[in-house]
Image 1: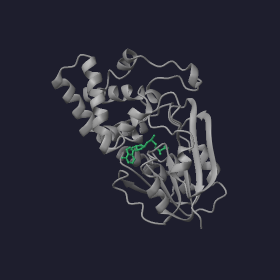
Image 2: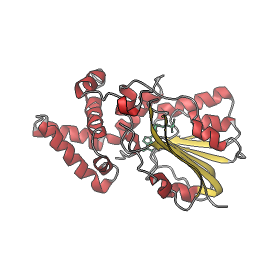
Image 3: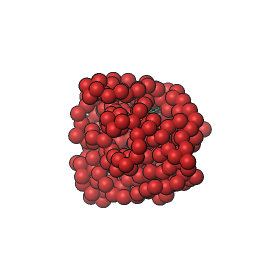
Length: 289
Ligand SMILES: C[S@@+](CC[C@H](N)C(=O)[O-])C[C@H]1O[C@@H](n2cnc3c(N)ncnc32)[C@H](O)[C@@H]1O
């Protein structure tokens, strides 16, 4: 199971009014959230309720789920929560099994569902920071990690980049392929998770990490960049009022230490996922030629 970054957005995609300032945003109650997901299949609801709980936990608890070594400690904490809610031992184990063993598939399914919707809580246009950082670069080979439905990969291909994107959410990737065919541009796509996709060594002139797992991928990305290649990354700050897995102050800079920083931003802006005004971090950095 990889629950790292894919963990995003229970709140962001299901409940808040877009563009409210972080401080004044009302947090939905558990009862509101249960109503919101009441039409989901029962096992989906188990998974979403765990995520809802997780979003309310401190970041050190959220991080427990990101690594195999600490995951069981995280699951034990949730067992305790379910006990408090009055679940029987058998019911607790049934739910933990869904969250643990089927976690990765649920995550992929929820992205298939979300990214083939027309949700107003997602920016379907290319990421603004990417566009700004890339506009004066000579196109080369680009890799879009966790490409989703291809809003960024397609834009890169249209700018002349020889673009490859990968993502395990096959229905989202199918949309990207269709859009590329309609636009008459070449886009290489691979259905794969981070652990299945081999980025290779020193081969990409641009690697994009847009609202995907960054911590676990950072070292691979550094190795996979060609000399002079760029990494462009954007995600939530940990102090964002909702999404788990966000970055602490300057953490993104430390992850890509050794690259030359072209731009780092820790700012309040409308996030591409959730479309709320919130605290986000952005990095553009170059591997030395
Ligand atoms: C918030 S979306 C971002 C999509 C895209 N990068 C964008 O900015 O539009 C997160 C993406 O991560 C993908 N994802 C989930 N689990 C993954 C995994 N194990 N490896 C790679 N990508 C994964 C999801 O399918 C989804 O497309």
